[in-house]
Length: 76
Image 1 (cartoon, rainbow, N blue to C red):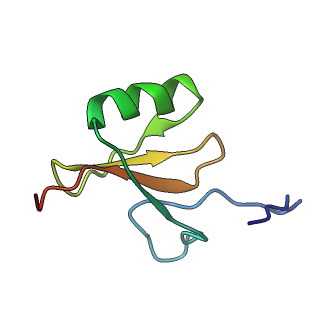
Image 2: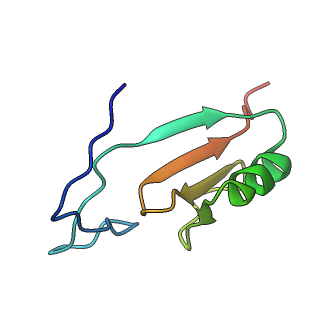
């Protein structure tokens, strides 16, 4: 996996909005304890997105606005 900077970067909106930058990538990360994972992500510089689709998932934003999801497997 490689990452690059872009001089004309525009922060994506979440959820998507017409006329605004759309999500460019998305990672789903399974965690054993959602609350602890959110706390760790925030300590590392992430923020919780205002949009949260369900109780077993937390949409997080990295420091420049890329969304990623932390989730617990609720099927078991």
